[in-house]
Amino acid sequence: MRNPTYLEISRHRVFYFRWPLIRPGAAGSGMQTSLKISLGTRAGSEALSLARHLSYVGQALMKQWSASGMRYDEIRAALKKHFQDALARRKSEMAAEGRLSVMHVGALQNGVGFAEEAIATGSDILPHISDDSLAIGFAEKYGLPLAPGSRAFETFKVEMRKAYRDYCAKVMAHDQSFESFEFDETVIPLSSTFAKPASGPVNTLTDVAAKFVAEQKKAESWVTRTEQQKLQHLELLKEILGTEIDIADVTSSDVQRVKETLLNYPRNRNKIEATRKRSIEELSKLRGYTTLSVRTINTYLQTYFGLFAWARKNRFVAENLFDGLGLKKSKKQAEAAQRDAFSQDQIELMTAELLENKRGLINKEYQKWGPLIGLYTGARLNEICQLELADIKQDAAIWYFDFNDEGDQKRLKTTASRRMVPVHDQLIAMGFLEYVDALRPRGQKRLFPDFSFSAKEGYGRPLSRWFNERFLVALDIKTDDLVFHSFRHTMVTRLLQAGEQENLVKAIVGHTRQGVTQQHYFKGYTLAQMQEALRKF
Image (cartoon, rainbow, N blue to C red; front, side):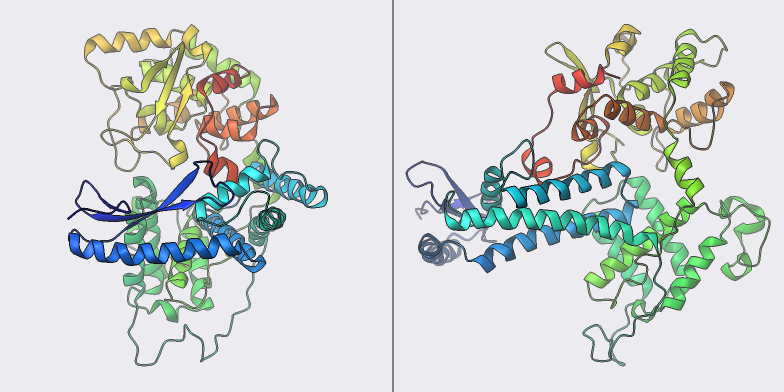
């Protein structure tokens, strides 16, 4: 059988239908994109029949598109769907990780301001990319018949500015909703789509939680440590509410009971003999034990918010009763959380001790190089501790760290954590490359051979304990808010103070960049750009 041009076969012998879509307004330019759909079959005759039908549909659609362009309501519907999906992703991120940072809020406020100005003046939304490019990229991504220069194209840009403005405002409004609590119980009408028939199937909390966890694993939404934490949170929820309770029967009173339990829940329950074997009811009556911090309680509530958000989306519950239930930090706690970057005096004190070892605190190489790498990269503790010698690379004249999750038992927090960061000039001057070269002839694979892997802690526990519990204490600069992670805050603070672009700083430290342009079109900063920024640290 001779296949037509629109019928392809993959290396797995599965047939695909490919149909060229001439970009509107680009006739004769040779510029085109295409639609590719799996036909789900390895049978040639069946694939040919399906492909012929699809080609007929494709021809009809192309004629319709070329003749009509896009209607106003179609333009608004396309933009609404795009930004609805983006808003849902941001809400999901906040459900999992907590409220927006000051940087994120600032970026969104700027987004609203840029969009308002663009709406009023007809200028571009973003300073480094034209609205024409954004609209063309949007049309290509979703296969929209938008011809540059056409009336529909100009209308699309106007509506895109409004949609982007309202998207930024919605994200900030959702973040602001965590400032207060709503205690009124919503009454669900009996005619509700979600109402469970009296004789209908029971979806127990245990079963729904298992499905929720399975989907997150399939999507690889959690790293190993996060997964273990979420499972621990869900086990406590089942212990409080009961494993066999129908999740649709959970009420606002039940949710308040969960919150009250967390407020009185002892820290390290399973490590203390007096609390290890006690029931939830018995624990609620205990006094004199250190309870969970506000931050830890919020991580539990975020897990439960995520579970019920997923359950609502999948029609197991009518509403997310954990929405807006997080605890608000006091003004003192919030201010303390902002004072977690090292001062210049503290940096100089630590650096001098790491290089000179006058107090005799450094007995192993990782105790010297681990903190120095943290200081000059802003990398996370475990990202540093899991580095292999093969991750220290050179491109032209620039040495860099390749932070990746390739290899045995290496893991990263997010996809944005996968990045390349130049080795700072100061690290090279301190002899870091000589340390690396000395390890290679000894047949070592890892940058810090002393570390062993822990499923819960990764590779970072030895360095974390030594730095936080001994080094900082000995230098008399240890506080609850100054730990190894403070190197990240120090790097971010210093680079922003030096005038570097926020998204460039995020690229260096491995934070997700914000905005349609950064997320979908921008392919990354060069090593030279990052090296120039790091030299300002």
